[in-house]
Image (cartoon, rainbow, N blue to C red; front, top):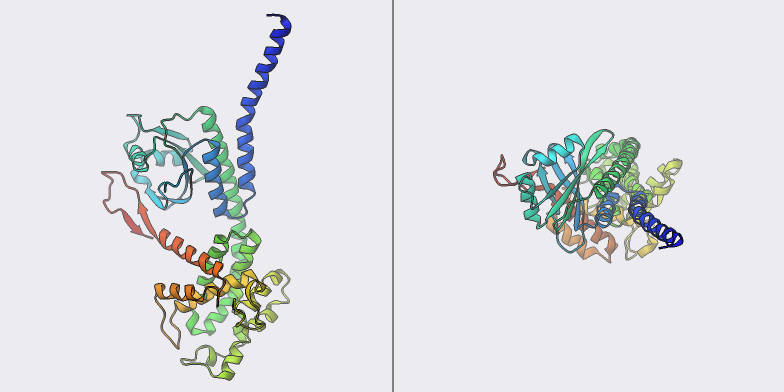
Length: 395
């Protein structure tokens, strides 16, 4: 072979080598872009679980958070329709290898055909019908925050490069979680300051203790289910905090009346959305939530107040707060009636969808309630011979 031929072969080989080396970098860049584009923590984790599965050519991925010795699944992705451990949790005392990964920060790869592997981890692989798992710790500001579990249904040994990619990805996830937590703390302080206004109202209205707090939680959950951007989620949250602030101008005799309101009393009660808007209008930072406060008693069919808006002319944040406010009101005892059961309240929402309420918001609230009910009960996957025999505990 001539020198020229050797030279060409070397160039071709170099191109192949460079292409092979650049592919993992390209995958990591795509992963970074995908998770950095998300402005809501929960959605970021969902995207991360999907992108990690694809980047490392796995079958499924779970992301879990450590809470009081329990590892609770918070996001998942599977390439197939298989429900891989969705909603399950783990007691760390049952899984020494997992506990060690979280304690030391060192990755660990486990294969079903490894006779020396931790029996508890092999039990999980059997339960999930998987052949291999890569355990990757998520560290946030120096503390073990949680765990990534990347599963494969094929016999597999994760290479050094794959482990390195997973470790870099986990570092990026940890950094984003830290940013979200810092932002959430700042927003929480701001929200608590505003909530003091709402608390003053609830002290006046004996029937609505904790009402606003529950409406706020549901509004955030519904906005998240609807995949709204971060600003819209925050506006829904603050709008829910202050939606009834106008009731400070409504006499207690009306708010706490044990029977039906008279026509004149009802006319006074119906002024509270406009009064609330007027109270908040001078506050520059709250301009975005004024439409929520003013329009949270509008109806999808146009029969609401104060302006009789209908359909999508009603601001989305107001539609969200309306359905959450109504659900909580139905679920609480009031001076003039007893609370409905959860099932009856859900049925009332479904009957009101498309008439009283935005059907999309009703569906999103029902999904959020199902998700909350699902996570309220911890179903722990426990290996044979674990210290406690009880599989569940209520949190």
